[in-house]
Length: 63
View 1: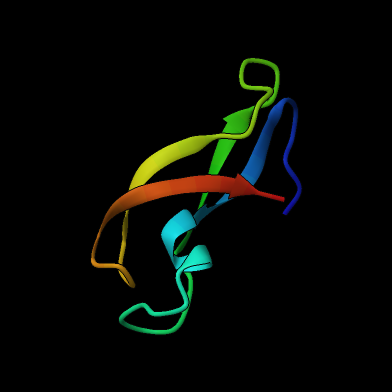
View 2: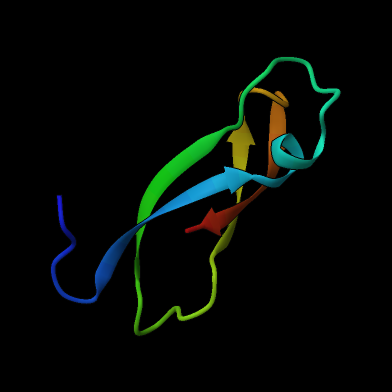
C-alpha cells in the first residue's frame, strides 16, 4: 500500500530491545504509524509500550 501525498508510513522500533542482548524474551517491539514529511523532517521518537521489555521505552523511526 503506497502512501498518497505528503503522509508516509513509518516504522518505530524499541531502542532498548535493539541494544540489550540480555533481555527477558527474544524479539524487537515495532509499531507502524504515519507522519507528515513536510512538518516533521527529522526522525520521529515516541514513548511507547514495549511488550518485550514490559515497560514504556523510547521508540525511534527506522528506515
